[in-house]
Amino acid sequence: MLRSAIAAVAIACVGLPASAEFNPERLATCMKSNTTPELKANVKQVIIHALQEQKPEANSALLNFSFNALAIATSQCGMSFADVQNPKFETAVEAYAQLLGEEILADALRMMDIPVY
Image 1 (tube, one colour):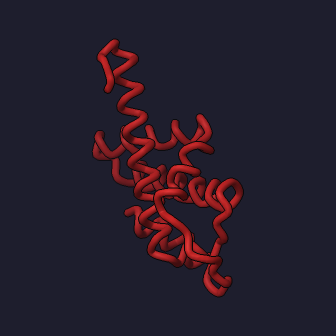
Image 2: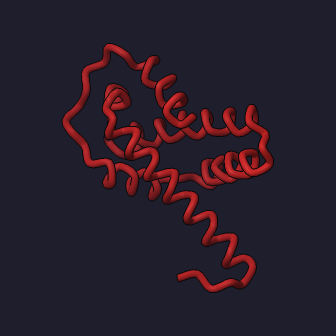
């Protein structure tokens, strides 16, 4: 589904010139450092809907996450809209989503007073 959401954003940006090569790990780290509480809450909704097997709601939340991730990447991390067409962008967004998921899990464990290493 993440590929479909990214593809939807990419289609909207077809025809724009791509910027110089970028490093997916650096982009993912930049995006994470610019994550808003609202976007983090959105990722929680993706996880909750997926765990509850509510596919339409999970897909909707994932699409919302994808558009917000693109907004962070372009407004805060120096990526151009044309970079969405680069496979490295998908790699960066997947790494970003993983970083957020790990942070959300760590927050949940700390909330339950379970040590996180």
